[in-house]
Every structure is written in structure tokens, then in C-alpha cells.
Amino acid sequence: MAAHIGRRLRKGAATTAVAAAAVAALSASQAPGATVDDQGRQSTGDATSAPDTAADDSATGNSPYYTDLPPLNSPNPSPSVGSGDAGDQRAGEAGIPATVLDAYKQAEATLREKKPGCNLPWQLLAAIGKVESGQARGGRVTADGTTVTPILGPQLDGNGFALIRDTDNGAYDGNRMYDQAVGPMQFIPSTWDWAGRDGNGDGRKDPNNIYDAALAAGHYLCRFDWDLSQQGDLRKAILSYNNSTDYLNTVLSWLEFYRRGTHEIPDGTGALPVDRSDDTARPGVTPSAPGTTPPARPGKPSGSRPSPSPAAPGNGGSPSTPPVTPPPATPPTPTDTVHHLEDAGTGTLTAMAGHTFAERVSTRAETEAGKAVAKVRIRFTLVGDTDTTFAGGETVATVTTDASGVAVAPALQAGERTGAFAVQAAVVGRSVKGVPYRATVTARAADALALAGEKEPTCVAGGEFAEPVQVKATYRGEAAGKVAVTATLVTSADDPAENDKGPYFKDADGKAVRSLTGLRTDADGQLTLPKLYADDTAGTFLLRLTTAGGATLDVKLTVEPAAAPSPEPDPSTDPAPSTDPSTDPSETPAA
Image 1 (cartoon, rainbow, N blue to C red):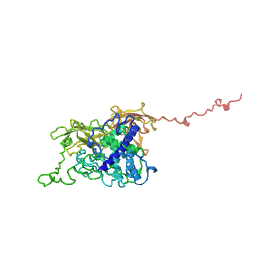
Image 2 (image 1 turned 90 degrees about the vertical axis):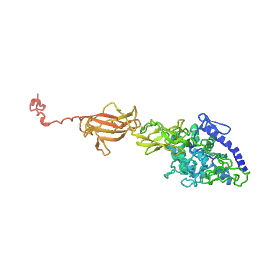
Image 3 (image 1 turned 180 degrees about the vertical axis):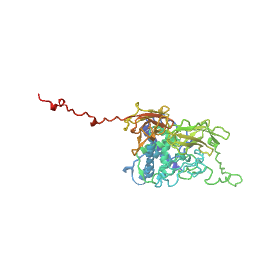
Image 4 (image 1 turned 45 degrees about the vertical axis):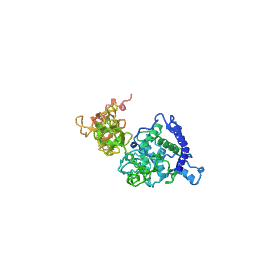
């Protein structure tokens, strides 16, 4: 133990300077207004303290993490590093295992396409992966990225850690009493349940797969439309992963280290971290590293019932042996007191495709007696065949109840898929009766159509209309984009039957058609119809345009008669040539 403490003191003297230098460098490069104190802690004007975040609202449940700081030498290997064990150790500590590094870079590429405004750097995933699991325990993963053995944090039983009771019936962590952080990015089961992603395309969402976990971590960090190129948003995102200022500074140190350069090392050769944030969380108990069996509670042997104390009366033990004191009973949390959920006055949930729902889902947590319960995490999950999302593009949102016991879900953003779906409200960490909410997305609609041009279309019989018909659709005065429009050449204003003569469109085969479906306005509500042609029938005709929502517009089309051709001269009606010599110059007598 003395040797261990001495090593930590020596390491602390060296790494404190590293933390201060790394965070200072990050401050200089990303946040002109940031300051760093003499302990390497960073602060900015817009983010001076950690948010008040419940443990089960973080990715890890605020589980323990590795506190090892980056080495003093450059992250890039060079011939001057040396050879032998010392050089190999430094390279392993600074490098990133090949499969793990590939997973981080793939996640960055995916997020660049899916959420470009987030500006997620892969080095941030690497920094978090280093702090959470030592890069998947030094890159001990299979070819598809799955860890050779599961990586588990200690059980979150409230004894030195957060208290998070089982939420997955042991499906991810094998623990049916309490949750444990799982995998190389250390997600707790309740978070993985909604944040999990399939990063390697095998059809599964496995928290122990580095490709899946890295992509899930990227989505988690980008879920609130944060721009991670901005220092304030970067801090918020990291703190949302694990709500600790020391955690923030450790991640920032590794982020700056990896940004200065890193290198790829073979899988399984990475250096294993040593120091953890819970080294002193339980006096007298050696903390477990991720991937090992969590330590037993003090005074309670692992996997067995407590033995009678030798000093207990009647046991015949030595009276000088102190009795074993059982741990104090854990007081009930607000979540423990919730009996059921009730609707808190949510109105009708209906929105047009592509629009934001005006109404928001509101749920109240209550005890059995109907008393409101504050500070309870409520998870809202979208259920059904829908592409509707909450703000930020997520299908799950977790909100804490306020003093009145009410949690209001983020606004729903309707997608393009129409029809009904449900929003399910449930208590995080408890199996109590939830509340389902029915929601409906209707087709895009317009309540008005107008002809874009001032002139009514005109054509000559047998010809084609020179200018195409252009219209604009609006809904409540705003441009109605992506609205379906039907165009039909009707018989008359009172007879909507399709006309069998007059103007017509052409189909792909060049045949005449007088009704078109599948037309759709552009993002500005504009629609240009295909070219119109006219048969030999002259007169006035009607083109009727209709949309979902009841908008109708009749466009008058005028077909003028074709000009009559000039008549050919008739020889039979021409006058006979004159026989009068006096009129024939050739017969004029000589003078």
C-alpha cells in the first residue's frame, strides 16, 4: 500500500502540470474568454459550474472513471522515444488500438452526415473512451469490435456511488438489483436503451461493441443541437456524460493530447489505466476495475450471507473483537415513492407533416395517495411506425418532474410519414403504470392556391401553350411546401368529370392525358405544371387544381380557332382573254 501511495504521489506531481497545460492549450485554441486556475481547472463566462444533473440522466450514471492523465511526451512516436519495455509502454499509453480508433473515426463520419452542426471530433470520443475504459481495456476486442469480455462498472447501489436500481432486468449488466455501466463507453442500461446505435451494421445494438458504443456516444453528445466547436457547448456535452468537474478536466486533457496527434497501435497492446476516481470511495475496500466483479459492501462477503460476529453474545468469540455493523438502510428516493403516472392536461396531439406539434406531452408523477412527486425522471418514448422525433432528432427524451410533479416532454417534430403513433411516458428506474398518448401526423396541406402569372393561358387549336401554368400554394398565409396537388381538365365549373376534348397533357409515352396526380409543390410552395397541348377543338376550358386541405383553383384555358388558309384561285372562274384587237397590243396597226 505504501508503494502504491508513493507511486500515486509521484504521478500526481507530474500529471498535475500536464492537466493544467493541456486544459490551458484547449482554452487558448477554443475559448478566448476561458481561464484556467492553478489546478488546471477551466472556466468560461457562460459555463462556470456543472449542471444539476441526476445520475440516471448522464450516460454513465456518474459511474467511476479513470483519472490517469496524458503522458508528458508527444503523442506521436519518434526514434528518440527509445526501445525496449519503456518505449513500448510509452507508445501503448499514447497510442489508440486500431479497431477502437477506426470506430471513433467512423462515428465522426456518420455524425458529420447526420448532424453536421454538432461538429463532433473523433478525438473527443477517444478522450471519453480513454477515461471510461482505457480504450476498451487496451483494445481487447474481436474483429467486429466486440470486447473480449464484458466491461462492467461497479453496481450503482448508493454505497459510495449513485443509487440507480435495476432498469433492464439484468439484460445488459447481468444485475437484477442495481444498474451497472456497461461497455467501452460505459453506458448505464436505462441510457443505452434509447441511445444505443448499430455502428457496425450487424443489426444489433450492443453496448459491448466499440462501433455501436462509439456511435451511440456521438449521438448522445450531439442530442441537444450542441455545437461542440464552441467551448460552452463542449463543456455541457462532457458534463452531461458524467457530471463531475474533475471528469470534465480529465477528458479535456486527453482531448487536447489526441488533437496534437496520436498513432495507431495493434489491438490488445494498449496500456491499461491504473488510477480511478473511486480509489477512496470505500475505505478499506479495493475498487474494482471495469470488467471485474464489483466489490462487496463493507462487512458483507461477496456472494454469501454475513457470518455471525465472533464477538456476538453466545458465539464464543473473543470479546475484544468488534461487532460487524450492518450498513445503514438506504432512504427511499423520490422515484421509490411514485405509484403511478397521470396525464397532466395534454391536449390533442395532431400536426401536419413537417410541422412542429403545437401541443406538448405533459405527465404528472403521483404517490398512491395522489400527491405530486418532484425530482423524478420521466422517460418519453415514441412508439409506432413514424419518423416523428423530439427536438434534436431523438425518439426518446428524459425530463425531471418539477415541484408540482409534472414533466413536460420536448416539442414533437412531425416527419413526412403520416398516420397515428404513440408517446409512452414511464418512470426511469421503476416499473409502474405509465401513460400512453396518441398522436397523429396528417398530410401536408394548403388552404389557398393562386396563379403565379397575370395572364390566362392561351393557345391556338392544334398547337401547344407557350407558357406552362405556374401556381403557388399557401397555408395560413405561409408558403405550403411539399403539398400534393392534383390537376384535372374538367368538363365545366359544375361538372368535375374529366373532359374528353380540348387541352391535354402528355404521359411518358406521348399519349394524351387530362388528369395528373403525384404533383407536389417545392419548398417555397411553388408548382410548375407540365406543358399543355390543344387538340382541334376551340373554346374555353377549365383546368382544376386541388390539394389536401381543401384548396381549389380553376384556371381558364382559351383555345382560339386556327386561322383559315388562303383559298387557291379557281381557273373556271377566271375571265376569258379579250379578242378585241384594240385591246391587244400585238394587233395594234402601225402608224
